[in-house]
Length: 99
Image (spheres, helix red, strand yellow):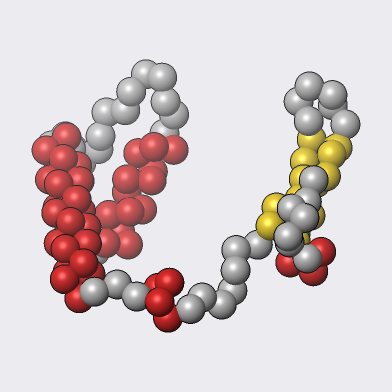
């Protein structure tokens, strides 16, 4: 399973277990291109600022939701269909964001 335009040296081979067959199978995933042209990665300052503002607004919205949903005891009540990993991800995200 390789792309004909992708050289073999640019591929990583991963082994995975097929749930249907129960036998290990090789899955070939192409690596993304390492080098990009200046034109391909150029973003105007206006686009960059708009993206940064959007990102900041999204983070602020998420933080406000977390603060609103946190109980007085300092925890969050999770959904019955999930496990504690979701809440753990919230906590570690807040830690990394310095909240």
